[in-house]
Image 1 (cartoon, rainbow, N blue to C red):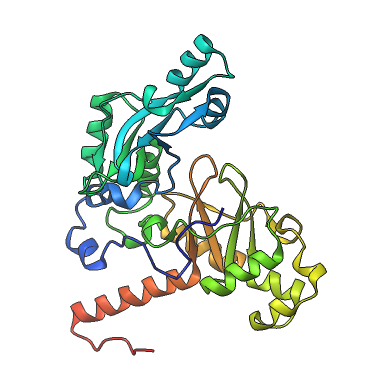
Image 2 (cartoon, helix red, strand yellow):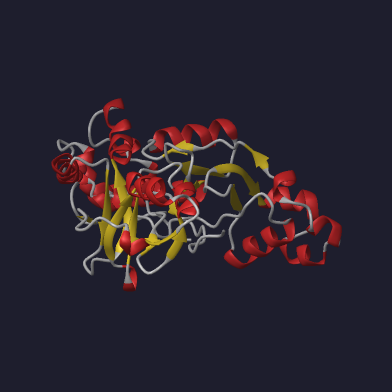
Length: 316
């Protein structure tokens, strides 16, 4: 269940330069962001060539209204809706198998990852849909943008003057698609992930990618003892403990679109090292570490000194 990108602080994030924030302070924040900055990158998809039982397909639509369909090279080829599957199941029965390509609706409306948020909202309204698949220049699907994502992007904007960098959404600083494991994984597996990826926090998610807990390096030290190098030699009984028993359940999290100021408040008040970022359905989207925040603050300090003609901050 681990996703592909490790929680290297600041990696894989799209950042809004502070110089831009100052230069365009009179322009609303959401007008300066693009689809890539706020879209959901963790997207469930179907492959056009696969055949599935209708009963299995129905389960996939318990929490979503539609699923994008991809073909060769991850190119977007269509969309299957909940009603497409329901109608087929009512006609043929839940036990029948169907090919995805026989269900998909074509053509499908998509949007470029570089499009502006106002243009995305207009496209969504024109197509009368609640979400749009996001594609890159090669028409490969790279994410999905929902009306909820647009609302989340707006959430922090009215809290202070437009252009205030502290109201930037945490989505711009966080690590997208962090590594994660399920509650049935073992401490031995978790230790391997933390060591190999050189991260300190590991979100724990259920089968629907919903956040249910978090495991930290500190938790592992308490359970396995010693340093990370000594974990592989820990007692087998300790290594086989399930994450569901060792994790911190129901961890503090932030909703996508929350502001940097809100994250700072949590870091200082709760003394946590990282904050998972989730969507409106509690599905894991990313993770923001205090290192990410410190790096962003250092970059802002350097940019401010450069504009004012002062010396750059000392390098480490």
